[in-house]
Image (cartoon, rainbow, N blue to C red; front, side):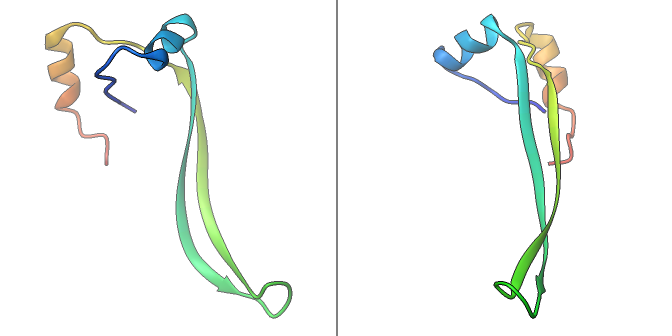
Length: 72
């Protein structure tokens, strides 16, 4: 995952102090009907990702990363 933090604020300070990160990616699937309960539900696929944030300051490395298609 890549992200851009353009201004210096608490998020950057917090990530520099502790680069541990976690984020959730989910995909809403079809709705399903039931005869009991509320009668409808949603099927989801999801994943929780854990890792370390890394700051990239080198302009050439930033350019290379910006050319990668992360499937978004």
